[in-house]
Length: 133
Image (cartoon, rainbow, N blue to C red; front, side, top):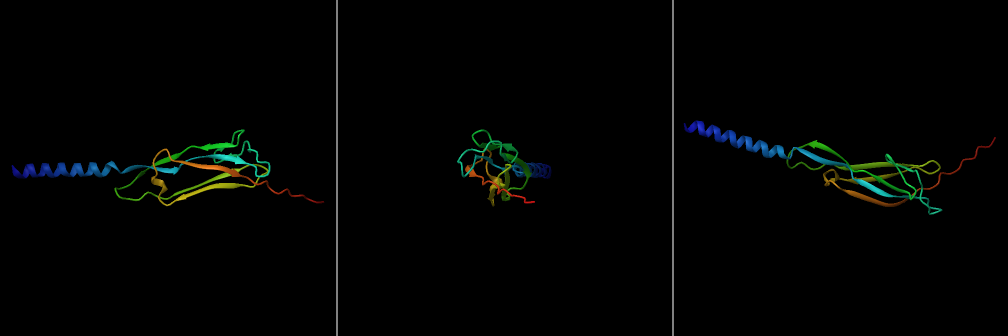
């Protein structure tokens, strides 16, 4: 009879341990924080409209906003968050290409709702090439 209760207690302890360990197995990770800012011409100091930033376009005020991207990762208790590396292209015809680059060695673990404010980004005009005949 004692062995029967001992097996039940061991099984219960084992199930509780598995449940506690598996609680943190599926974790939400940050792929890209919310990014916002403005794109301006450095000479005229005017906003650049319809400039492609990541997957979005700037509005008439040069403002852009990229949504936060997250993913779920299977992990064990005590494991460190992966590094966060973001590289979003800024493209506008007649201007030199630029990019928004972010790096944080443990950034994948930042909480939901993370925001990165780029403030103002200035795009230089591309040099005009003249073709002589």
